[in-house]
Image 1: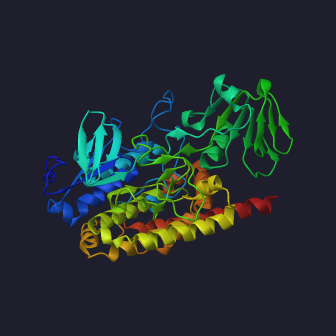
Image 2 (image 1 turned 180 degrees about the horizontal axis):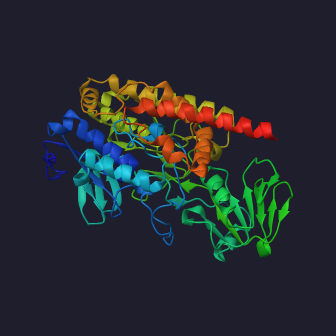
Image 3 (image 1 turned 135 degrees about the vertical axis):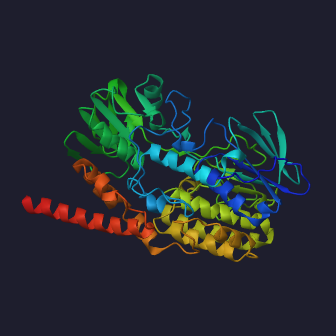
Length: 496
């Protein structure tokens, strides 16, 4: 297949608008693909470039040595997705037929490479190019790269991810454990071996759950600490609550007074910080935003969230137009690929039609959400910041529907371009289908069922050929899998 003609990048071309995408991970690739879909790009009005710091694409899905400070990727050897791939894929490009329902990281990385090549994205990416600074000059963004180039852009799309900079707890004693090598962050975790007989895993998120389960296959005793956990011992796994203090000689005291001793190593699955080192304090202040009201006039990075952003993307500040800068992929507890795809469409709609963003209404929407979050978690600004980008299960789909509606409300140009280029097997719609919501809500039970299939050696048989006729085959397969697993569990209970 012949590649499309690719114009030489010239951000100073007065006849076009230059778009900078920072990062060639899932969000950056989606952003680039949506740009190339647009009639504005095809007419020469938009001129995109993607800057990627590493030598290959994929973001967090491109593995790296654990030796970095911090590692360039936090992917561990046994990682699989925690969302079934039919609901995780970009809407414009499904995973291949017969793919494992919960694919491993290598499969996801190959998927991203296939996506890139299918839509001819690779030639627009400048690899081994780090963005060093992004400054607003009063009319455009000046971007300085590691190649010592200073380029001007009309739109900057920030897609650098948020799973790189480890977040460490401030629990008393943890600094000493880290300095002597008795503790490490899960960013450096790759496999469960050679960590000693007794291992403590701190953190109740997906990584903490996965790592504690995997550690049980190699360590004599695994202690899994998570806030609010039910205290129980199951085999060689001990579930405990929040750590209150890290003591000497491998002793740990928990908030309920429980004590564990002889811990050889602690893995901190305590999350990551939002980090944007290319922004100066003039653009993005490194602090927790003040309580509302009023809405802050400056942009804040608390390391837990970026605030205030209209629609979790567009900065509402007095310094620069909200349609000139956008953050993609900040939301957590979501199916990220289709979500960043929808975000990219919304960003480009606002860029094409800045008047579609109504600052007053956007500010009202932010303040409404702020009050809702404050009712849930209390008045403390840091706690609100921690919760800001966290969505409950179905909120992400309402959010995506709102973004689709936002794009349709345009002059039709971008939306028409999007719908006209959908390939075979893709999903073209302006509402999230019910099957996708149902599949996401049942992801935990489906993952348990899938793991059981893998243990029985039946997983490959179950997915063979599935997807050749379209996504509905995956929907049917997951329903059969859920029913099969329920029957298996009932059969187990009947034998007790």
